[in-house]
Amino acid sequence: MATWMDKFNGYGLYWIAQMTRRSGRFETCGMEHLAAAQASGRPIILTAWHGMTMMLVGFFSNFYDTARLVLLMPDDWRGAALEIFSSKLGAEPYPMNLHAEGGMATARRLAELVRKVKGGRDAYITPDGPEGPAYVIKPGIAFIAQKANALIIPIGAYCRHGYRMPRWDRYVIPYPFSRIAIHIGAPLAVEKGADLTAVTHHLTNVLHRVTAQAAADYYEAPRG
Image (cartoon, rainbow, N blue to C red; front, side, top):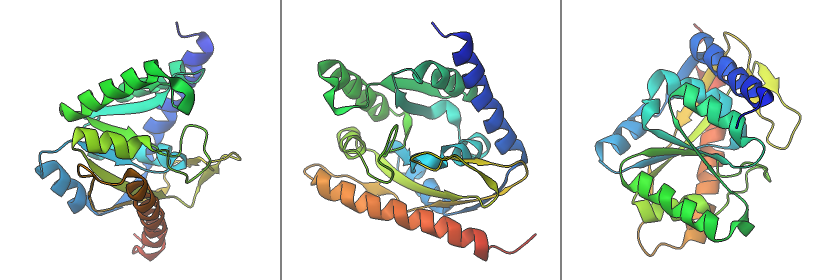
């Protein structure tokens, strides 16, 4: 059962997300990649580095059907607040043990997530979360995409004016009315028989590239 602190944190995160959604000035590049993935009829896994999440939830609320989204999150002490946050966004929270030693219970939860995605739900996964190291992808995302026949959509985000939390992921909370650049990369398919280690290495490079491109878009965009 959620405690008062869980509720405070969950509603606080939602309030920040709403502030970002309503006041943020989103400049998006690559929407055609998202449109192509949606037109393919295959399920979609949206992915970005963990520290960009607050920039992206505002974007999703404005430009994406959040009711389609399953948000992967840890099932530890953070889970109750994050479940409240996700539910308020209209997405489905999906808590599970994200540590390698999870055992059979984690395997069953992972299989259920694959079924959800294969059945037509989209997922949002931060592959270096929930505790890092930063920019080090855990193997789960490539496995889920392969088993669910899903397309991975890499996303980068950048905001100059925001609070960067002094922790492992440099989590960014945009200030009100900030300009936020979003760069969406081309869909990545993980075919049957693909080497998941190679896929993970490639996805790491792609996420670094779209992240750098988001920063470039921010500074190259015409001033309004």
